[in-house]
Image (cartoon, rainbow, N blue to C red; front, top):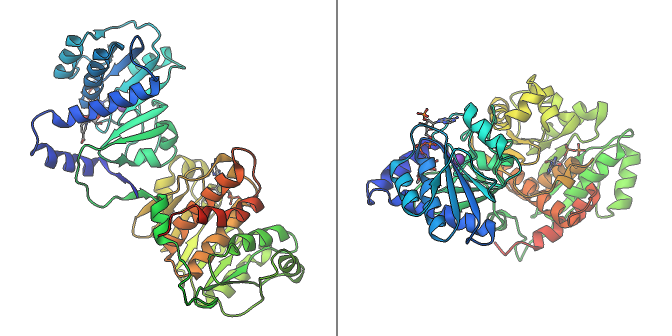
Length: 458
Ligand SMILES: NC(=O)C1=CN([C@@H]2O[C@H](COP(=O)(O)OP(=O)(O)OC[C@H]3O[C@@H](n4cnc5c(N)ncnc54)[C@H](OP(=O)(O)O)[C@@H]3O)[C@@H](O)[C@H]2O)[C@@H](O)CC1
Ligand SMILES: Nc1ncnc2c1ncn2[C@@H]1O[C@H](COP(=O)(O)OP(=O)(O)O)[C@@H](O)[C@H]1O
Ligand SMILES: [K+]
């Protein structure tokens, strides 16, 4: 599991560890990891030019100590002090190692952003903005966090650094996983400094977590014990949505798929998926994609069954609190805006806040779709999906996702696990199907079994 902790949690763990270690030991660990990552990105050390942007706190201290390590390896290191105060020990060590303080740097090969880390408020001061503007186009390695981002919120409120690589310490911070700040973090490299941390409020499944959660058929399995998922999606106007929901559900992760809906759509579903059957008992429902004006009735019929339900697309605006069954709601930002009355732009700017609020308000798991899809539980826990490719932003991809999550619900996963495992597999399948090029929703569905095969045994 990749875990992201709050600043308060990191501070507490840091205080605990620092009390047991010689002074400065943690900063030395951080600086060593940072220097290593900088050389890795540069490809070599001797003769390369690195500029440190240094703020007033320990984030600047990390940059200065790392700069000293780089200078000893032959890197030409300059430090641009953006505050009247700079970490005294770090500054002295940099100078001893041959680094220089400058106010007018030449054009470096790489910039180290040590302006501000977990002690920072969102936004940057004018001196930092001007410095960054003069260095436009030079790759930036951010120390701990890209300066200026909302570390605990993942929000961007004002100017901020956009990093190629972020080297962080002890644990991920929420800004590294949650958009839009995650986009400003670039590739995130975690340096272990030995912090002992509590449960994380935000996490991202990794392949071994998905392998462990994935429902697998027991040796004595039969189709009914593996679970049956029912799909109520598609309509005469939007038959494709029904086909794609079924394609996601029929990837083999549960025992059987039932389709209930428009006769003409049902004929096409059976043609494309001969294994799909009609009405009967199910362990989970998927409702809404392409349902058009029938979506409200279909949702009511599904909820009357009392089994866990995925509510997508057209059915979302018919959801009323309290929802009578364990549910996964799967809106994109526009659909969530229509449900809650919030502004769509504000949802895109503050997806963590809005996903959490909606999960609490509806008493259901809310999966907010996007580049880094968020899965929020009513108790406040959040998982972030980091698999996928921008090629997945294609019509019908969401229909496939709903069907896939429904099959995992039918197989017995909790709504939170079904939504997060389904979203992870959906992204992994898209990456496989894409191979770096365009992809269709149908191809994503067809790649789900390969994405499952790519996991180690759980
Ligand atoms: N925790 C750990 O385990 C470890 C932590 N370590 C490192 O310590 C870092 C945290 O250091 P920190 O506490 O000194 O805070 P930090 O981020 O440097 O900022 C402090 C000062 O910046 C200022 N400032 C604020 N907002 C600003 C803005 N928008 N724009 C400009 N300036 C702004 C404000 O000071 P002011 O100028 O207002 O007086 C504030 O007091 C952490 O990120 C990691 O790198 C590692 O060394 C080892 C293990
Ligand atoms: N930039 C992006 N990068 C990766 N995945 C994305 C991006 N934008 C959207 N997606 C994913 O693509 C899918 C689109 O679903 P949705 O918006 O419901 O489309 P549709 O309604 O046409 O099926 C979602 O799984 C979403 O997370
Ligand atoms: K920083």
